[in-house]
Image: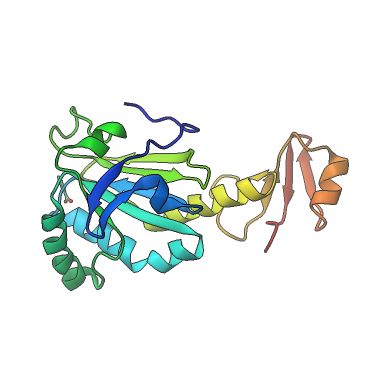
Length: 211
Ligand code: BEZ
C-alpha cells in the first residue's frame, strides 16, 4: 500500500517493547513519528535508534511521540536495546514494534522488495494530531537518517500548521519564513505585526512568528 501525504495514517494494534498498543490511541492529541529500520543487531540501525533515544526530550518538547518498527521480535528488540545503550549511551526509551507477521510493514508499504527483499527499509512517517500523514521519508539500508533533519521538518510542519506560513530552502528554527500568497498585504500587516519584506508579490518574508 502506498501512503500519501494527507492520508489518514492507518491505525493498527501491535506488540511493542512497551506492551500492546494501538497507534491512534497511543498518539492521542500528540504529533507522532512512526519509523522503520531494517534489522536489529545491525550497525547503522544501532546508531539511529540510539540517536532517537538520546533526542527523545527534543521530540517530547515538540509534543511528539516516537514509535519504531521492524520485522524482528519484541524479545530481539529488548536484547538489542542493551547493545544500543552500551554503544550509543542510551537504550530504547520509546516503543519498538515487533512486526514479525509484517502487518504494520505491509500497511505502510515499508518493504521495498527491489531494495531489500525481506525487511523494512528506513522509512519515516510524520503524523499530525489529526492523524493525517504530514511528511514521509525513505532511505536505503546503507544510509543512516539525520535526526536533526527530522526535528527541523517537524518544526517547519508545526509552524505551518499554526500560522499561514511556509519555510524556504534550508530553513531552520529562527530563520525568516514565507507568508502564504493567499494572504493579502492588508491581512499580512495585521497577522505579522513584526512586518514583512516583499521581494516579489508572491515572495514575502517575515520573522518567524512566535519567536
Ligand atoms: C545496518 O543497519 O547497518 C544495515 C541493516 C540492514 C542491511 C544493511 C545494513
